[in-house]
Length: 441
Length: 93
Image 1 (tube, chains in turn red, yellow):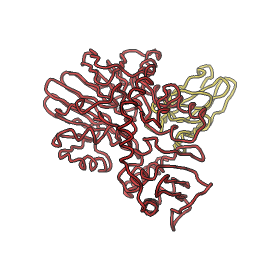
Image 2 (cartoon, rainbow over the protein chains, first blue to last red):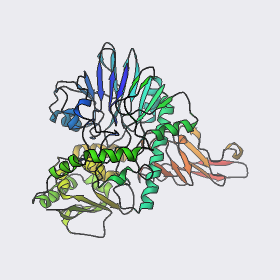
Image 3 (cartoon, rainbow over the protein chains, first blue to last red):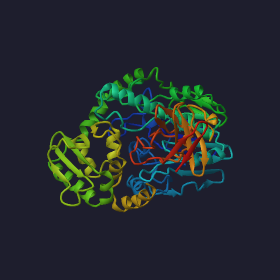
Image 4 (tube, rainbow over the protein chains, first blue to last red):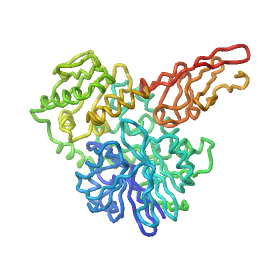
Protein backbone atom coordinates (compact mmCIF):
# COMPACT_ATOMS: atom_id res chain seq x y z
CA UNK A 1 0.00 0.00 0.00
CA UNK A 2 1.31 3.43 -0.84
CA UNK A 3 0.18 7.00 -1.36
CA UNK A 4 1.17 9.29 -4.20
CA UNK A 5 0.90 12.95 -3.25
CA UNK A 6 -0.36 15.03 -6.17
CA UNK A 7 -0.31 18.52 -4.70
CA UNK A 8 -2.54 20.57 -2.37
CA UNK A 9 -4.94 18.00 -0.82
CA UNK A 10 -4.84 15.42 -3.59
CA UNK A 11 -3.67 11.93 -2.70
CA UNK A 12 -3.77 8.73 -4.73
CA UNK A 13 -4.06 5.79 -2.34
CA UNK A 14 -3.14 2.46 -3.85
CA UNK A 15 -3.43 -1.06 -2.43
CA UNK A 16 -2.44 -4.24 -4.23
CA UNK A 17 -5.78 -4.28 -6.04
CA UNK A 18 -7.47 -0.89 -5.80
CA UNK A 19 -6.84 2.80 -6.29
CA UNK A 20 -8.77 5.67 -4.76
CA UNK A 21 -8.01 9.31 -5.45
CA UNK A 22 -8.93 11.99 -2.93
CA UNK A 23 -9.67 15.64 -3.72
CA UNK A 24 -8.39 15.71 -7.28
CA UNK A 25 -7.15 19.17 -8.16
CA UNK A 26 -4.07 18.60 -10.28
CA UNK A 27 -4.09 20.75 -13.43
CA UNK A 28 -4.78 24.38 -14.08
CA UNK A 29 -5.65 27.15 -11.69
CA UNK A 30 -8.63 27.22 -9.37
CA UNK A 31 -10.54 29.92 -7.50
CA UNK A 32 -11.22 32.19 -10.47
CA UNK A 33 -7.89 31.61 -12.18
CA UNK A 34 -5.64 32.43 -9.25
CA UNK A 35 -4.42 29.43 -7.22
CA UNK A 36 -1.84 26.90 -8.43
CA UNK A 37 -0.58 23.89 -6.52
CA UNK A 38 2.90 24.00 -5.00
CA UNK A 39 4.81 22.66 -7.97
CA UNK A 40 7.94 23.84 -9.70
CA UNK A 41 6.34 23.27 -13.06
CA UNK A 42 2.62 23.33 -13.74
CA UNK A 43 1.09 19.87 -14.00
CA UNK A 44 -0.42 18.63 -17.24
CA UNK A 45 -3.19 16.12 -17.88
CA UNK A 46 -0.45 13.46 -18.03
CA UNK A 47 -0.09 13.92 -14.27
CA UNK A 48 -3.71 12.89 -13.69
CA UNK A 49 -4.10 9.21 -12.78
CA UNK A 50 -7.44 8.63 -14.42
CA UNK A 51 -7.35 4.83 -14.09
CA UNK A 52 -8.72 4.84 -10.56
CA UNK A 53 -11.44 2.69 -9.04
CA UNK A 54 -12.93 5.35 -6.79
CA UNK A 55 -12.88 9.08 -6.16
CA UNK A 56 -13.50 10.74 -2.78
CA UNK A 57 -14.14 14.48 -2.60
CA UNK A 58 -14.19 16.18 0.78
CA UNK A 59 -16.13 19.34 -0.07
CA UNK A 60 -16.90 21.82 -2.79
CA UNK A 61 -14.01 24.28 -2.60
CA UNK A 62 -12.20 24.26 -5.91
CA UNK A 63 -8.83 23.30 -4.48
CA UNK A 64 -10.53 19.97 -3.69
CA UNK A 65 -13.21 19.78 -6.36
CA UNK A 66 -11.95 21.18 -9.63
CA UNK A 67 -13.73 20.74 -12.92
CA UNK A 68 -10.65 20.93 -15.15
CA UNK A 69 -9.13 17.91 -13.40
CA UNK A 70 -12.35 15.97 -12.88
CA UNK A 71 -13.36 16.14 -16.54
CA UNK A 72 -10.47 13.79 -17.32
CA UNK A 73 -12.04 10.96 -15.31
CA UNK A 74 -14.53 8.40 -16.60
CA UNK A 75 -17.97 9.66 -15.62
CA UNK A 76 -18.91 6.18 -14.43
CA UNK A 77 -16.21 6.23 -11.74
CA UNK A 78 -17.91 6.05 -8.35
CA UNK A 79 -17.56 9.31 -6.46
CA UNK A 80 -17.91 9.12 -2.69
CA UNK A 81 -18.77 12.16 -0.60
CA UNK A 82 -19.89 12.74 2.96
CA UNK A 83 -23.61 13.08 3.56
CA UNK A 84 -24.14 16.77 4.31
CA UNK A 85 -27.26 18.57 5.55
CA UNK A 86 -27.92 19.92 2.05
CA UNK A 87 -27.75 18.38 -1.43
CA UNK A 88 -25.83 21.31 -2.92
CA UNK A 89 -22.50 19.50 -3.23
CA UNK A 90 -24.12 16.33 -4.60
CA UNK A 91 -25.89 18.43 -7.21
CA UNK A 92 -22.67 20.19 -8.23
CA UNK A 93 -20.96 16.85 -8.88
CA UNK A 94 -23.97 15.62 -10.82
CA UNK A 95 -23.76 18.72 -13.03
CA UNK A 96 -20.29 17.56 -14.15
CA UNK A 97 -21.87 14.42 -15.58
CA UNK A 98 -20.90 11.86 -12.94
CA UNK A 99 -23.55 9.17 -12.66
CA UNK A 100 -22.50 7.24 -9.60
CA UNK A 101 -22.34 9.49 -6.54
CA UNK A 102 -22.51 7.81 -3.15
CA UNK A 103 -23.10 9.71 0.07
CA UNK A 104 -21.55 8.31 3.24
CA UNK A 105 -22.86 8.99 6.71
CA UNK A 106 -20.19 10.47 8.92
CA UNK A 107 -18.17 7.88 10.84
CA UNK A 108 -20.03 4.97 9.20
CA UNK A 109 -17.42 2.75 7.49
CA UNK A 110 -18.15 1.73 3.90
CA UNK A 111 -16.61 -1.44 2.47
CA UNK A 112 -15.62 -0.81 -1.13
CA UNK A 113 -14.48 -4.41 -1.50
CA UNK A 114 -13.14 -7.20 0.70
CA UNK A 115 -10.00 -5.31 1.54
CA UNK A 116 -10.79 -1.62 1.29
CA UNK A 117 -12.92 0.37 3.67
CA UNK A 118 -13.39 4.12 3.78
CA UNK A 119 -14.93 6.32 6.46
CA UNK A 120 -16.03 9.88 5.82
CA UNK A 121 -15.78 12.19 8.81
CA UNK A 122 -17.91 15.32 8.75
CA UNK A 123 -16.92 18.56 10.42
CA UNK A 124 -19.19 19.77 13.23
CA UNK A 125 -19.63 23.28 11.84
CA UNK A 126 -23.26 24.30 11.59
CA UNK A 127 -22.76 26.55 8.60
CA UNK A 128 -20.02 25.18 6.35
CA UNK A 129 -19.79 21.64 4.94
CA UNK A 130 -16.49 19.77 4.92
CA UNK A 131 -15.14 16.29 5.62
CA UNK A 132 -12.02 14.19 6.20
CA UNK A 133 -11.36 10.58 5.20
CA UNK A 134 -10.02 7.42 6.80
CA UNK A 135 -8.91 4.60 4.47
CA UNK A 136 -8.33 1.10 5.83
CA UNK A 137 -6.98 -2.00 4.17
CA UNK A 138 -5.25 -5.14 5.44
CA UNK A 139 -2.05 -3.44 4.35
CA UNK A 140 -2.49 -0.39 6.54
CA UNK A 141 -4.51 2.68 7.52
CA UNK A 142 -4.29 6.16 6.04
CA UNK A 143 -5.90 9.37 7.22
CA UNK A 144 -6.52 12.42 5.00
CA UNK A 145 -7.59 15.53 6.88
CA UNK A 146 -8.05 17.42 3.60
CA UNK A 147 -8.68 20.86 5.09
CA UNK A 148 -11.48 19.79 7.38
CA UNK A 149 -11.55 21.61 10.71
CA UNK A 150 -12.22 18.65 12.96
CA UNK A 151 -13.71 18.29 16.39
CA UNK A 152 -11.54 16.93 19.17
CA UNK A 153 -13.64 13.82 19.77
CA UNK A 154 -13.06 12.77 16.15
CA UNK A 155 -9.32 13.18 16.64
CA UNK A 156 -9.42 10.81 19.60
CA UNK A 157 -11.34 8.27 17.54
CA UNK A 158 -8.74 8.59 14.81
CA UNK A 159 -6.01 8.00 17.34
CA UNK A 160 -7.76 4.75 18.26
CA UNK A 161 -7.77 3.77 14.58
CA UNK A 162 -3.93 3.85 14.69
CA UNK A 163 -3.24 5.28 11.24
CA UNK A 164 0.10 4.43 9.69
CA UNK A 165 0.20 7.62 7.63
CA UNK A 166 -1.69 10.86 8.16
CA UNK A 167 -1.94 13.83 5.82
CA UNK A 168 -2.52 17.03 7.75
CA UNK A 169 -3.40 20.55 6.74
CA UNK A 170 -0.90 23.20 7.82
CA UNK A 171 -2.04 26.42 6.17
CA UNK A 172 -5.00 28.75 6.15
CA UNK A 173 -7.19 28.73 3.06
CA UNK A 174 -8.87 32.07 3.44
CA UNK A 175 -8.83 35.66 2.20
CA UNK A 176 -8.05 37.17 5.61
CA UNK A 177 -6.01 39.35 5.87
CA UNK A 178 -4.95 39.57 2.20
CA UNK A 179 -8.15 41.03 0.79
CA UNK A 180 -8.63 43.64 3.50
CA UNK A 181 -7.52 47.22 3.60
CA UNK A 182 -4.80 47.02 6.25
CA UNK A 183 -1.56 48.91 6.47
CA UNK A 184 1.35 46.69 5.46
CA UNK A 185 2.49 46.55 9.08
CA UNK A 186 -0.95 45.45 10.31
CA UNK A 187 -1.36 42.95 7.46
CA UNK A 188 1.99 41.37 8.16
CA UNK A 189 1.28 41.16 11.89
CA UNK A 190 -2.06 39.39 11.29
CA UNK A 191 -0.62 37.10 8.63
CA UNK A 192 2.27 36.06 10.84
CA UNK A 193 -0.06 35.25 13.73
CA UNK A 194 -2.53 33.34 11.55
CA UNK A 195 0.23 31.30 9.98
CA UNK A 196 1.72 30.48 13.39
CA UNK A 197 -1.69 29.46 14.78
CA UNK A 198 -2.30 27.16 11.85
CA UNK A 199 1.10 25.52 12.17
CA UNK A 200 0.49 25.10 15.90
CA UNK A 201 -2.80 23.45 14.98
CA UNK A 202 -0.90 21.05 12.71
CA UNK A 203 1.35 20.08 15.62
CA UNK A 204 -1.65 19.47 17.88
CA UNK A 205 -3.54 17.41 15.29
CA UNK A 206 -0.50 15.21 14.71
CA UNK A 207 0.16 14.88 18.42
CA UNK A 208 -3.40 13.78 19.22
CA UNK A 209 -3.86 11.38 16.28
CA UNK A 210 -0.25 10.14 16.41
CA UNK A 211 0.18 8.33 13.08
CA UNK A 212 3.57 6.72 12.48
CA UNK A 213 4.18 9.19 9.66
CA UNK A 214 2.61 12.60 9.14
CA UNK A 215 2.74 14.56 5.91
CA UNK A 216 2.15 18.32 5.89
CA UNK A 217 -0.20 19.12 3.02
CA UNK A 218 -3.24 21.21 2.04
CA UNK A 219 -0.91 24.11 2.39
CA UNK A 220 -0.83 27.45 0.80
CA UNK A 221 -1.10 27.71 -2.98
CA UNK A 222 1.01 29.73 -5.36
CA UNK A 223 -0.50 32.91 -6.86
CA UNK A 224 1.47 33.29 -10.09
CA UNK A 225 -0.53 36.09 -11.74
CA UNK A 226 1.68 39.14 -12.01
CA UNK A 227 -0.84 41.26 -10.07
CA UNK A 228 -0.81 38.88 -7.09
CA UNK A 229 2.84 37.99 -6.58
CA UNK A 230 3.06 39.72 -3.19
CA UNK A 231 0.58 37.21 -1.73
CA UNK A 232 3.32 34.58 -2.00
CA UNK A 233 5.88 36.24 0.25
CA UNK A 234 7.10 33.45 2.56
CA UNK A 235 7.90 35.88 5.38
CA UNK A 236 5.01 38.34 5.30
CA UNK A 237 2.36 36.18 3.61
CA UNK A 238 -0.25 34.11 5.42
CA UNK A 239 0.41 30.97 3.37
CA UNK A 240 3.18 28.69 4.55
CA UNK A 241 5.40 25.94 3.13
CA UNK A 242 5.66 22.36 4.43
CA UNK A 243 9.11 22.80 5.98
CA UNK A 244 7.56 25.16 8.51
CA UNK A 245 5.18 22.66 10.18
CA UNK A 246 7.93 20.03 10.10
CA UNK A 247 10.26 22.38 11.95
CA UNK A 248 7.48 23.29 14.41
CA UNK A 249 6.89 19.60 15.13
CA UNK A 250 10.58 18.98 15.73
CA UNK A 251 10.75 21.99 18.07
CA UNK A 252 7.62 20.95 19.97
CA UNK A 253 9.28 18.18 21.93
CA UNK A 254 6.53 15.78 20.89
CA UNK A 255 7.50 12.33 19.72
CA UNK A 256 6.09 9.13 18.27
CA UNK A 257 5.50 10.48 14.75
CA UNK A 258 7.90 11.27 11.95
CA UNK A 259 6.85 14.36 10.01
CA UNK A 260 7.71 14.34 6.31
CA UNK A 261 7.87 16.98 3.61
CA UNK A 262 6.61 15.61 0.34
CA UNK A 263 6.77 17.28 -3.06
CA UNK A 264 3.97 16.81 -5.57
CA UNK A 265 4.42 13.40 -7.30
CA UNK A 266 6.37 11.93 -4.36
CA UNK A 267 5.24 8.60 -2.97
CA UNK A 268 5.18 7.13 0.50
CA UNK A 269 4.80 3.43 1.26
CA UNK A 270 2.91 2.21 4.26
CA UNK A 271 6.24 1.44 5.98
CA UNK A 272 7.29 5.08 5.61
CA UNK A 273 9.60 4.63 2.61
CA UNK A 274 9.60 7.99 0.84
CA UNK A 275 10.23 7.97 -2.90
CA UNK A 276 11.22 11.45 -4.03
CA UNK A 277 10.16 12.30 -7.56
CA UNK A 278 10.25 16.08 -7.38
CA UNK A 279 11.91 18.97 -5.58
CA UNK A 280 9.73 20.23 -2.72
CA UNK A 281 8.84 23.90 -2.53
CA UNK A 282 10.06 25.20 0.79
CA UNK A 283 10.04 28.60 2.44
CA UNK A 284 13.66 28.97 1.28
CA UNK A 285 13.05 28.38 -2.44
CA UNK A 286 9.40 29.36 -2.79
CA UNK A 287 9.98 32.69 -4.52
CA UNK A 288 12.34 31.14 -7.09
CA UNK A 289 9.75 28.46 -7.85
CA UNK A 290 7.01 31.06 -8.01
CA UNK A 291 8.93 33.27 -10.42
CA UNK A 292 9.53 30.34 -12.76
CA UNK A 293 5.91 29.24 -12.59
CA UNK A 294 4.71 32.80 -13.08
CA UNK A 295 6.68 33.11 -16.32
CA UNK A 296 5.50 29.69 -17.47
CA UNK A 297 1.76 30.28 -16.96
CA UNK A 298 1.41 34.07 -17.38
CA UNK A 299 0.23 34.01 -20.97
CA UNK A 300 -2.31 31.28 -20.25
CA UNK A 301 -3.50 33.08 -17.12
CA UNK A 302 -3.93 36.36 -18.96
CA UNK A 303 -6.00 34.56 -21.57
CA UNK A 304 -8.13 32.94 -18.89
CA UNK A 305 -8.74 36.30 -17.20
CA UNK A 306 -9.68 37.85 -20.56
CA UNK A 307 -11.99 34.95 -21.38
CA UNK A 308 -13.97 35.60 -18.21
CA UNK A 309 -15.67 38.33 -20.21
CA UNK A 310 -17.38 41.51 -19.06
CA UNK A 311 -20.40 42.30 -16.97
CA UNK A 312 -23.63 42.75 -18.86
CA UNK A 313 -25.78 45.86 -18.88
CA UNK A 314 -28.26 43.95 -16.73
CA UNK A 315 -25.87 43.72 -13.78
CA UNK A 316 -27.37 46.53 -11.63
CA UNK A 317 -30.80 44.91 -11.88
CA UNK A 318 -29.36 41.48 -11.15
CA UNK A 319 -27.55 42.77 -8.04
CA UNK A 320 -30.69 44.46 -6.75
CA UNK A 321 -32.92 41.46 -7.39
CA UNK A 322 -30.45 38.95 -5.97
CA UNK A 323 -29.80 40.73 -2.69
CA UNK A 324 -33.42 41.79 -2.20
CA UNK A 325 -34.39 38.16 -2.59
CA UNK A 326 -31.85 36.56 -0.27
CA UNK A 327 -32.21 39.22 2.42
CA UNK A 328 -36.02 39.30 2.39
CA UNK A 329 -36.24 35.51 2.43
CA UNK A 330 -33.96 35.17 5.45
CA UNK A 331 -35.08 37.54 8.24
CA UNK A 332 -33.41 35.39 10.90
CA UNK A 333 -30.07 35.70 9.11
CA UNK A 334 -30.56 39.47 8.76
CA UNK A 335 -31.05 39.80 12.51
CA UNK A 336 -27.74 38.07 13.14
CA UNK A 337 -25.86 39.83 10.34
CA UNK A 338 -27.04 43.31 11.38
CA UNK A 339 -24.85 45.44 9.17
CA UNK A 340 -24.72 47.65 6.12
CA UNK A 341 -22.60 46.58 3.20
CA UNK A 342 -21.11 48.85 0.57
CA UNK A 343 -20.70 46.82 -2.59
CA UNK A 344 -18.72 48.29 -5.45
CA UNK A 345 -19.00 46.33 -8.68
CA UNK A 346 -15.93 47.73 -10.35
CA UNK A 347 -15.64 48.14 -14.09
CA UNK A 348 -17.86 48.21 -17.14
CA UNK A 349 -21.60 48.01 -16.33
CA UNK A 350 -20.82 47.98 -12.60
CA UNK A 351 -21.97 50.43 -9.97
CA UNK A 352 -22.20 51.23 -6.28
CA UNK A 353 -24.75 49.53 -4.07
CA UNK A 354 -25.74 49.74 -0.41
CA UNK A 355 -27.06 46.50 1.07
CA UNK A 356 -29.06 47.20 4.21
CA UNK A 357 -28.92 44.00 6.24
CA UNK A 358 -29.68 45.71 9.55
CA UNK A 359 -31.76 43.86 12.11
CA UNK A 360 -34.23 46.80 12.28
CA UNK A 361 -34.80 46.89 8.53
CA UNK A 362 -37.96 44.83 8.52
CA UNK A 363 -39.31 45.55 5.04
CA UNK A 364 -38.97 47.61 1.86
CA UNK A 365 -36.01 47.46 -0.46
CA UNK A 366 -32.77 46.21 1.01
CA UNK A 367 -30.67 47.43 -1.89
CA UNK A 368 -30.13 51.00 -3.06
CA UNK A 369 -27.69 52.34 -5.59
CA UNK A 370 -25.17 54.80 -4.22
CA UNK A 371 -22.45 55.31 -1.65
CA UNK A 372 -22.49 55.61 2.11
CA UNK A 373 -19.88 56.21 4.77
CA UNK A 374 -22.09 54.32 7.18
CA UNK A 375 -20.99 50.85 6.07
CA UNK A 376 -19.83 48.00 8.29
CA UNK A 377 -18.51 45.89 5.44
CA UNK A 378 -16.99 47.11 2.20
CA UNK A 379 -16.40 45.01 -0.90
CA UNK A 380 -14.90 46.22 -4.16
CA UNK A 381 -15.14 43.38 -6.68
CA UNK A 382 -14.66 43.23 -10.46
CA UNK A 383 -18.14 43.69 -11.94
CA UNK A 384 -17.99 40.59 -14.13
CA UNK A 385 -17.23 38.42 -11.09
CA UNK A 386 -20.09 39.97 -9.13
CA UNK A 387 -22.35 39.10 -12.04
CA UNK A 388 -21.23 35.47 -11.96
CA UNK A 389 -21.98 35.26 -8.24
CA UNK A 390 -25.38 36.94 -8.31
CA UNK A 391 -26.21 34.67 -11.27
CA UNK A 392 -25.22 31.68 -9.09
CA UNK A 393 -22.48 30.60 -11.51
CA UNK A 394 -19.71 31.32 -9.03
CA UNK A 395 -19.72 30.69 -5.29
CA UNK A 396 -19.04 33.84 -3.31
CA UNK A 397 -16.49 31.90 -1.28
CA UNK A 398 -14.62 30.93 -4.43
CA UNK A 399 -14.61 34.55 -5.50
CA UNK A 400 -13.35 35.65 -2.07
CA UNK A 401 -10.64 32.98 -2.06
CA UNK A 402 -9.33 34.36 -5.34
CA UNK A 403 -8.20 37.52 -3.52
CA UNK A 404 -9.23 39.43 -6.66
CA UNK A 405 -11.19 41.94 -4.60
CA UNK A 406 -10.69 44.43 -1.79
CA UNK A 407 -12.56 44.56 1.48
CA UNK A 408 -12.77 46.54 4.67
CA UNK A 409 -14.63 46.16 7.95
CA UNK A 410 -16.02 48.52 10.61
CA UNK A 411 -15.64 47.18 13.26
CA UNK A 412 -12.78 45.00 12.12
CA UNK A 413 -14.31 41.64 12.91
CA UNK A 414 -15.53 38.47 11.22
CA UNK A 415 -19.26 38.23 10.58
CA UNK A 416 -19.93 34.53 10.06
CA UNK A 417 -23.62 35.21 9.52
CA UNK A 418 -23.00 37.32 6.43
CA UNK A 419 -20.62 34.79 4.92
CA UNK A 420 -23.08 32.03 5.79
CA UNK A 421 -25.88 33.82 3.96
CA UNK A 422 -23.72 34.15 0.86
CA UNK A 423 -22.50 30.55 1.22
CA UNK A 424 -26.00 29.25 0.60
CA UNK A 425 -29.04 31.51 1.04
CA UNK A 426 -31.56 28.69 0.83
CA UNK A 427 -34.19 29.70 3.43
CA UNK A 428 -34.75 26.15 4.67
CA UNK A 429 -31.03 25.68 5.30
CA UNK A 430 -30.73 29.05 7.00
CA UNK A 431 -33.79 28.42 9.16
CA UNK A 432 -32.52 24.98 10.23
CA UNK A 433 -29.13 26.41 11.18
CA UNK A 434 -30.53 29.16 13.37
CA UNK A 435 -32.89 26.80 15.16
CA UNK A 436 -29.75 25.13 16.50
CA UNK A 437 -27.54 28.21 16.68
CA UNK A 438 -29.99 30.18 18.79
CA UNK A 439 -30.26 27.30 21.26
CA UNK A 440 -26.48 27.10 21.60
CA UNK A 441 -25.82 30.82 21.98
CA UNK B 1 -8.30 25.77 45.58
CA UNK B 2 -4.87 26.45 47.06
CA UNK B 3 -2.89 29.15 45.29
CA UNK B 4 0.25 27.12 45.77
CA UNK B 5 -1.23 24.38 43.55
CA UNK B 6 -1.78 26.72 40.63
CA UNK B 7 1.07 27.01 38.12
CA UNK B 8 1.83 30.39 36.62
CA UNK B 9 1.49 30.80 32.87
CA UNK B 10 -0.14 27.41 32.26
CA UNK B 11 -3.73 26.56 31.43
CA UNK B 12 -5.08 23.81 33.68
CA UNK B 13 -8.37 21.96 33.86
CA UNK B 14 -9.96 22.30 37.29
CA UNK B 15 -13.34 20.73 36.54
CA UNK B 16 -14.35 18.21 33.90
CA UNK B 17 -18.14 18.58 34.22
CA UNK B 18 -18.72 21.37 33.58
CA UNK B 19 -15.34 21.76 32.01
CA UNK B 20 -13.57 24.77 33.51
CA UNK B 21 -10.01 25.88 32.96
CA UNK B 22 -7.92 28.18 35.10
CA UNK B 23 -5.05 30.47 34.24
CA UNK B 24 -2.78 32.52 36.44
CA UNK B 25 -0.48 35.17 35.03
CA UNK B 26 1.24 35.58 38.40
CA UNK B 27 -0.91 38.55 39.32
CA UNK B 28 -4.48 37.52 38.57
CA UNK B 29 -6.53 34.36 38.14
CA UNK B 30 -8.95 33.70 35.29
CA UNK B 31 -11.51 30.90 35.11
CA UNK B 32 -13.56 30.21 31.99
CA UNK B 33 -15.34 27.32 30.33
CA UNK B 34 -12.80 24.96 28.83
CA UNK B 35 -14.31 23.83 25.53
CA UNK B 36 -13.88 25.86 22.37
CA UNK B 37 -17.32 26.57 20.87
CA UNK B 38 -15.89 26.17 17.35
CA UNK B 39 -14.92 22.47 17.26
CA UNK B 40 -15.03 21.39 20.89
CA UNK B 41 -11.29 21.36 21.43
CA UNK B 42 -10.11 21.36 25.07
CA UNK B 43 -8.82 24.84 25.67
CA UNK B 44 -6.04 23.77 28.03
CA UNK B 45 -4.23 22.79 24.81
CA UNK B 46 -4.24 26.45 23.85
CA UNK B 47 -1.84 29.24 24.64
CA UNK B 48 -2.19 32.55 26.45
CA UNK B 49 -0.43 35.72 25.37
CA UNK B 50 -1.20 38.69 27.57
CA UNK B 51 -4.97 38.26 27.98
CA UNK B 52 -5.62 36.47 24.70
CA UNK B 53 -6.30 32.75 24.85
CA UNK B 54 -5.74 31.03 21.49
CA UNK B 55 -7.32 27.62 20.93
CA UNK B 56 -4.77 24.97 19.95
CA UNK B 57 -7.03 23.49 17.29
CA UNK B 58 -7.96 26.19 14.84
CA UNK B 59 -6.69 29.39 16.40
CA UNK B 60 -9.90 30.93 17.70
CA UNK B 61 -9.07 33.70 20.16
CA UNK B 62 -10.81 34.68 23.39
CA UNK B 63 -10.30 37.39 25.98
CA UNK B 64 -9.46 35.31 29.01
CA UNK B 65 -10.62 38.01 31.44
CA UNK B 66 -14.25 37.95 30.27
CA UNK B 67 -14.59 34.99 27.87
CA UNK B 68 -15.47 37.17 24.87
CA UNK B 69 -14.65 35.59 21.53
CA UNK B 70 -12.43 37.85 19.45
CA UNK B 71 -12.32 35.71 16.33
CA UNK B 72 -16.04 35.28 15.99
CA UNK B 73 -18.02 37.73 18.16
CA UNK B 74 -20.92 36.11 19.94
CA UNK B 75 -19.29 32.68 20.29
CA UNK B 76 -18.19 33.53 23.82
CA UNK B 77 -16.96 31.35 26.68
CA UNK B 78 -18.64 31.32 30.05
CA UNK B 79 -16.73 33.41 32.51
CA UNK B 80 -16.53 32.34 36.19
CA UNK B 81 -16.15 34.59 39.22
CA UNK B 82 -13.05 34.29 41.33
CA UNK B 83 -12.71 35.49 44.90
CA UNK B 84 -9.36 35.39 46.64
CA UNK B 85 -8.22 34.93 50.22
CA UNK B 86 -4.62 34.87 51.34
CA UNK B 87 -3.92 31.26 50.38
CA UNK B 88 -6.89 30.19 48.33
CA UNK B 89 -9.15 31.13 45.48
CA UNK B 90 -12.83 30.28 45.21
CA UNK B 91 -14.45 29.89 41.80
CA UNK B 92 -18.18 30.47 41.52
CA UNK B 93 -20.81 30.60 38.80
